[in-house]
Amino acid sequence: MTTRTIVVGTDGSHSSQAAVRWAAHEAVRRQQLLRIVHVFESEWAEIQYDRGSEHVDLAEQRAEAVMATAAGQARAAAPTVRIEVQTLIGRAAPELLKAAETAELTVLGNRGRSEFASLLLGSVSQRVATHAAGPVAIVRGRGDVTDGPIAVGVDGSSAAEHVLDIAFELAVGRDCPLSVIRSYLPPVPLWVGDVPAADLESLRGAAERAALDELLEPWRTKYPQVPVEAQVSRDSAAAVLEAASCGAQLVVVGSRGHGAITGTMLGSTGVELLHHANCPVLIARDRPYREAAF
Image (cartoon, rainbow, N blue to C red; front, side, top):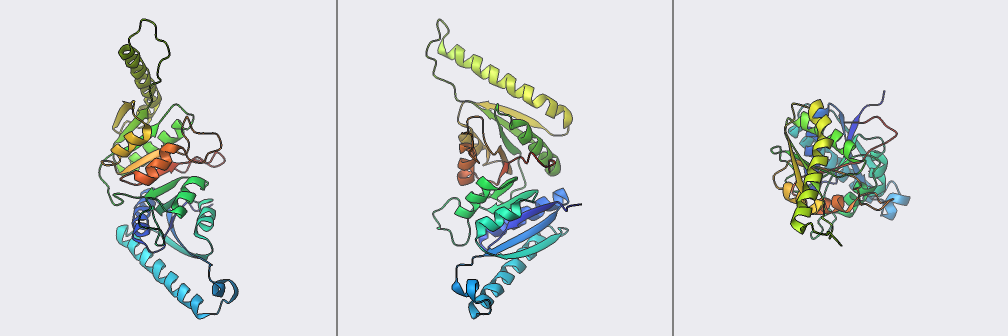
């Protein structure tokens, strides 16, 4: 039987330390193993061709220090967490993507140690978030927050059921309410006859609200213990969820929205939130060939 594992990447940066603490709490909630992964880059010729050099020794010493610090922070945040550490040599993004293949959840900070201070999302975090085989959480903003609801964005796509499945399970584990948001952009009517534009908009809003209530009905029945606030907005999903992130402890979105281009790994709403959300963001990517992990 395969051990269910949460993978968290660390490079010793403040952002990755916040990710380790968040992942440790999540591993305890789910009763899963926490695997802390550190990748040091094989850019130096000494590492690639001379494994016994002084540079390699220094790199390995630094890696050991990074891992020891990360493990200590994980245990301080969640004393009962089960930990496994793994140090790899290579390029960070490809190695983390490999680790994500068997992980129930992969967790990263929003920026690494070597990223420019002006970047809102580091290149490694963005690549893993957009290409990982399963769910990914990017810890950003108020990374240690434990109060407030989980904000979840849904639309009319087939992915909405999977997103809600994950969101409700997370809400049960955290004993917190859900704020479920459905956003729509009202089309500009080319011809509405004798129907005033305000009435047309009212009808559209009522239809969107009815669709959201219908979507949520079986989930409210399945999870009566989870308080649910349903919200319909005519603003963009990214704008509404970004505003919600200021009071939420977590934002959950699907990997691709209703209007995403076929073949894209992450919709525009997800990308926007990874750059600007004020709390951790979980990309609820489904594995169709695996049993749901949440």
